[in-house]
Length: 124
Image (cartoon, rainbow, N blue to C red; front, side):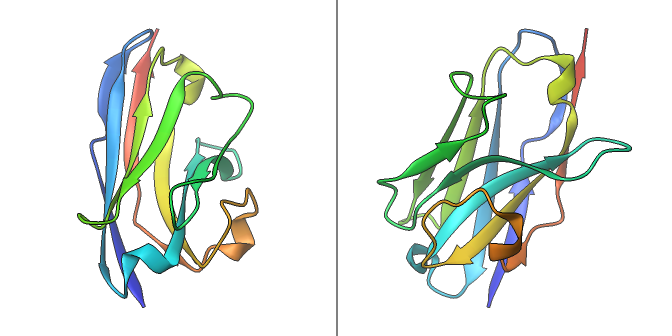
């Protein structure tokens, strides 16, 4: 079992950058592909980015491609999401999730463990 906790949310202006991190504890972190998802008010949760257990494979939603970067440090049991050129439509609660031996899929149901989320607010 893996426990996940997100850090780094906050209020920024459009065009700014923000970094999120997700610390994992419990099971061996390097066994898990990690994903970031987000949910805006009144909308369904959506895929943002994912990284394979080895870090070799990454996957991004079209809406964030070129602006967001996912990375991981298996020595620190942490996955990161660097968000550049933020837009008001990026505002949401951001969740990290873990998928055992996953391949950085976009499919939400493959992720077994979830954090509580961190709020990102982007003012225009």
